[in-house]
Length: 566
Image (cartoon, rainbow, N blue to C red; front, side):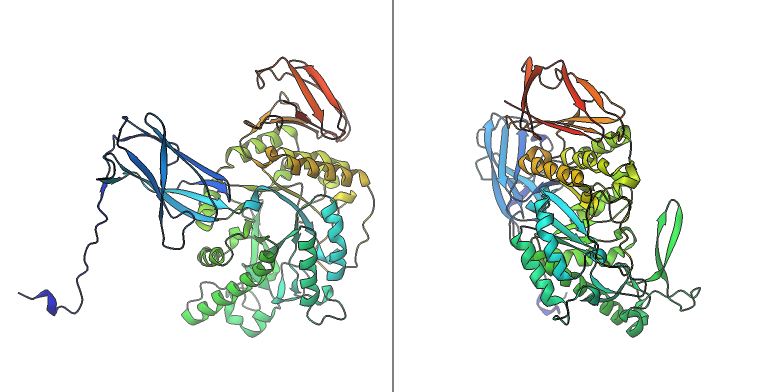
């Protein structure tokens, strides 16, 4: 018989933690989900509140949450649940760090002599950056904004409208098609934006970043990870980094997307070959693209900002998982938003796996009140799992004048996305001036001198003021429609439970031609009073009316916003 001392390896020793698996009948109720792959989201510095109810009252019970929340990597801590009443124990913990964390209940019923693990799976909480709860994003189109020095001159205007994030379309050197999403070089700034005295543009760019910080503006940068320009530096120097396609004249596979059940091939874009069979080449591709993502993320990080993952639904899953894992370690407070159009279950899975904070919504596809109302209900219903960015339009869509019939339609639409959403909204450059048609972001162009409709800009500015002053607009699940399913006017109550004087009524008329009077009965929603006292948030006037008979007049493209006074 062989002696273990003569074996070529040491037999490991089991290290007991003196823990047992608990019985099924000990815990009666948990306030948190124990479903595998389920999760809950909160924001940094918010309170994580957990409750556990035992089946029987235990005089010597000790209960702790064992978790890696707020710990160094591979470290865990125990957070004690205090006995509230009888069999109920609770924990209210202010989470300090962003990240993806696990936790499980551990308990003793004999004052600490014997310890048990709750027999259910670990639970999962994702902690988003604190800034995620308030995003008012202005998309700046470099093609029509001049040079970087000119962009600096736009920042006071953007901040003055009440925005707190500036989204820059990609500013990398453009390839032959002159699309910002078709790069020639991922690490250089296009010469069209560079001043005469700055050879690379990064000197001016650093000044732009400093000016943004001075104005309290965070920056959002696009990351284009799926494809690159057909005439790019990468194609010229490392053609083996591109997916092959014998059907193409140059042998390089074109990128594209699905639209209305049709595949749209982009002739100016080729797909990066993340699955290259040669291990060394594959490593070089992944390493290069990871450095590109970190390069631009660094500039976003300097402003406490964001990155946007373009066309994520077509990107390589393995590389994206690898990239996001590293980025989270490097920039834990960076907000990651993604263009990712698919079914909700897939989005929820991606939100958990990659800790993606925000997904692009598509509310402009719901032009009528009934459909938009249902979409907002959906956004609130799933808001504790997945958060959506709700701008009026995007740089890819038409402007409000084209989509909704009139430039002034931007005001009620913005009131809906900002004051009936969950805290993340925005506009595209030019909307505030009532531009009659979409500003093209592809091609070479002269700097625009924007001018025109001041009504739209003033309306957006007023909405942003109300939005920033009311935390009630930054939450999910506190929206109740009170408009009796009106065909054109959306009317909503934003509840501020536990915060007297912060509940609001918001009305937005989507009809560009006709005004309406709504007769609103609030007795179902506010049961503790007979009359209601309101402050008009647009003009400061005050009203008193019977709770059952509140009459609200809303002109075409008009909005009304009231604070319910305590």
